[in-house]
Image (cartoon, rainbow, N blue to C red; front, side, top):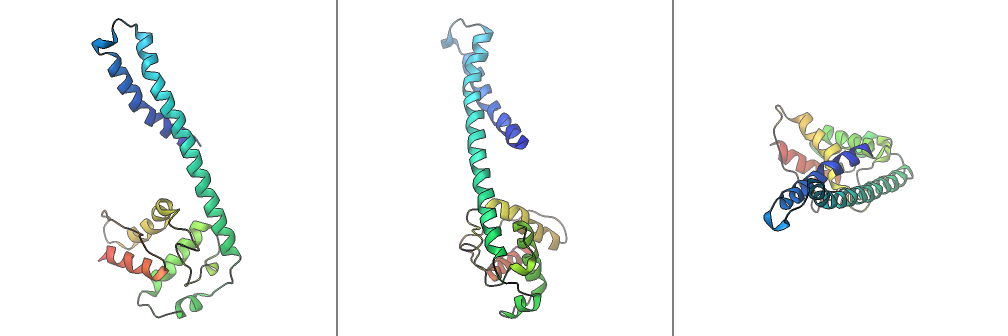
Length: 174
């Protein structure tokens, strides 16, 4: 919550500065410094409140979605690493296992609960969790496999399987 308040405050600085600069224009007439600050504080306050409300809403939605997926994954049958890899052949078996562990950490479930046939959109609802998923799962996977850290672009559009995710990660690493 502190981070949300801090970011909302930082965001509110922009309308405050704009309002203050506008209050310096000649069409404002003769106004006191207190009135100028009040004129600048009104849009800043509205921005601060709006950012807090929207951030709280988004945080609640994300938390709710992660909890729902967590509960759904816990109700699944366990699969061993051998069963996970045996679903279909794949050259980069260690990458698949790393993805499995990263997904399990993201949703706070044992890795054995993440099966290979899990649908990223339907089962894990990655479309609703795109940014946090990429930030905590995809980003670290890519940076851990790079020789030297360099920027990359990654899109999860129309990605539905762990194999597709692994293929996209490999494309970024090439």
